[in-house]
Image (cartoon, helix red, strand yellow):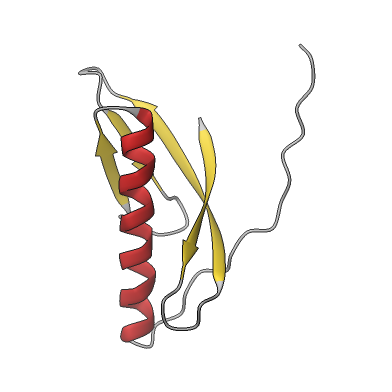
Length: 85
């Protein structure tokens, strides 16, 4: 399942949104990944813990890119539509 999270860039105080994919592995651990930030992966014992951890990982990833004057992937701008199935 994918979630959207906001990362607050500390250098320019701009809110950015990144898609996050969360899956439960065979041991029951929740693994969170941000596809637009290669290698940005975290985990947690619960889904909410994995979401908090990936938020911190994304924050650190973006700050590192900015510090090293590397391009930061753009924030996403999308909506989710739910329907009855």
